[in-house]
Image (cartoon, rainbow, N blue to C red; front, side, top):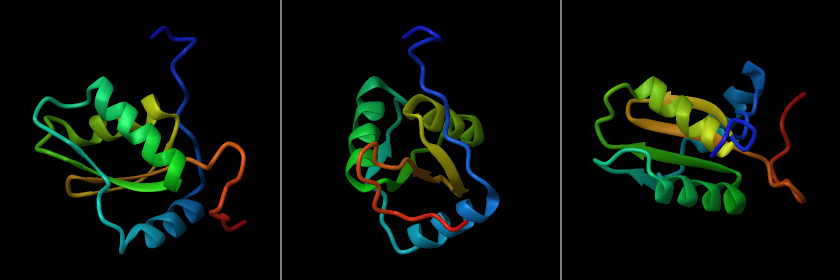
Amino acid sequence: MTDEETPKALQLDNKAKRYLKSMAHHMRAVVTVGQHGVTEGVIGAIDAALLQHELIKVRMHEPDNKKSAAQALATQTGSCLCALIGHTVVLYRPHPEEPEIKLPR
């Protein structure tokens, strides 16, 4: 993937991130990043989950650097990193045609 094809991470303000984090509190992780780290298959699974749910949790299995791994997930999927709690990442990307989650203003 070239730099032109790489999606940019979505940017939201802190109020929107707090709102999304509270919405994700009761959710379970829908994707798990295994011992092989972030692979094309993981990115594809996250893309599909974001398209279907808009807001998801991703569980990382003992990453070397969890902050950079979480930011890499957000950048590679064009989503917003809402929260990093332990080894769990909360990602948000609105549906391109029919977004269901309404963010506070």
